Image 1 (cartoon, rainbow, N blue to C red):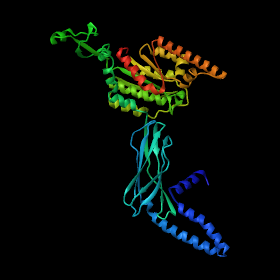
Image 2 (image 1 turned 90 degrees about the vertical axis):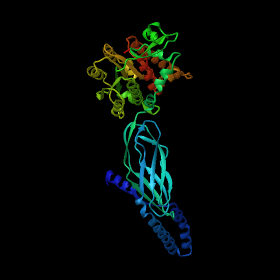
Image 3 (image 1 turned 90 degrees about the horizontal axis):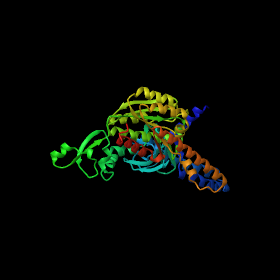
Image 4 (image 1 turned 60 degrees about the vertical axis):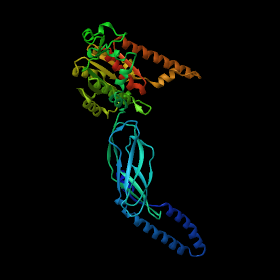
Length: 453
């Protein structure tokens, strides 16, 4: 028999099978002693026939009650939006049309890229009613996944027989990157933070180039910001307030090559970078800028032209949620040349990549220097927690001393190369993975407030 035929047989058995219940197993075990007693009395065959015949008769009666299990209605409720690393409740509802209560064990065929808190759920379903079993699922891979069948085990009222049955409940689950920071932006968290920060909060906008509004003069305001016409009309000093220019271009370059697949705390560097890139998109679109996205490895994988508004954010999410790191090295030349060809107007180019590629690739440094002639560049990298831990450790053994020395030398060289990028006029952000999204947002706001673009 081929493996596929064996698999088919196993699947059919799993979806429609009869199994012995706990009471039948106990009775059959106890029957060994009864049959041995009958054999000692020279009535072994009689005891065997009568005892097992009674069990068989009761089992057939018990099985007759379970013939209607296939009439149960089973459905799953899991919600339409899944986010990476977030717990989501999954509900399995069972309606019992039979005239007696059922004791059920439920198993759900959840997607391969998910973790669940419990595999088997037990529930009692009264006659003519619906019962619900709930478990928690946490996806650890983005993209499209599929729930498969739901399997039930129903025990007969006499507890002698178990009926196992599978029900079709195929369902697609689309797993997005974590969107917590995007929701915070849409809720106005960063807008409120800007308004409330500092002793004279709105001064952070005064270095912008677009007029916003006027407000009452405070002693720390610069005299050149006083609006003399409005002051004369109102009879008191008022100050002009400016905001950063809107409608500028933000180009996101997302490296999805081999090293971006390195995992830390259950998520890859690409997962963290994509989360931060979408948060940057949300805050940029909120500020009225246009955002484009180019994802690449050894080839161009995704390109979303510049756009604005909430609909464009949805477009960016749909275009990037299922990006996976390749096993190939990243081709920076192709990516940067493609961006230079497709986006000629001056932009803030935000490159999410690996720090080692950025620091130790002289070729990439040359490409960035050429791109900088037209665009403002911000490189975003994730700090290596292992390297940092080794550099800050307290060594005890000799090999730990050498390990710390090597780690500190690598950190020194890393910082030296990053400083070289800064001296060339390239903005550099090197952040821990769990704080990457807020750090990128604040870097963007700093660029806008300084009117650096």
